[in-house]
Length: 280
Image (cartoon, rainbow, N blue to C red; front, side):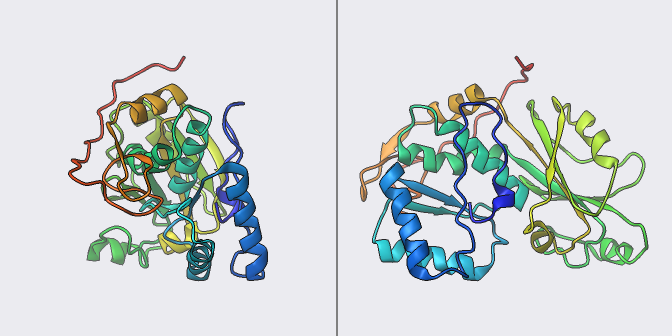
């Protein structure tokens, strides 16, 4: 991770701790290079997750470091999820890191698991929201004091004005809901968690990148996700693996996250439907 506030706490004693590459755009290049080289030497392979709202100087520094190391053992992954969704995905990969998955499969599992993350936010304004289509009526309502809007950015865009009876289409499988609050407050998500039949609702501080991603500081971000390691492992292990013809790693899906090569004659697997389960 490139930000400490996106390194979510572990959920069990098997979850691997997160490594935070801090202040990459402010530290001397040689210091950052030495840190990343040490991680490669310690773990063999490194997967760096950052959101689409990560400052460009930080992203450029990551690509510079990877180029200087001349290594295909560093994967840079920027999923199209909001910041809280990226943080949740990173923790899922940290959970899977304790399993018997090869580096290539673990890295490419991030692209698969993205399909099962439902990420959104409650916003005080959609005037600067460019991640989800916003109609003129919603833009006009943004200027009414006290207005709130509920938005789902992934897996499919949704936007409703927060009024009694308003709801959003949620996952068709059992999840937990994580809520990240800043100064902006809303009670609407408690009802949404019940409608989505979540096992429960947990809270975490709002990532600093959330305001940039959503176009406003008046935001409460939420994310529904799979928390059970056995379900995560079953999803990943059930997908057909292939060997990357460029770097030789085992991968799933239609792209090697480490070298960006596409396995030849590969048909991407469709995300599996999940059955409703009760928590153990």
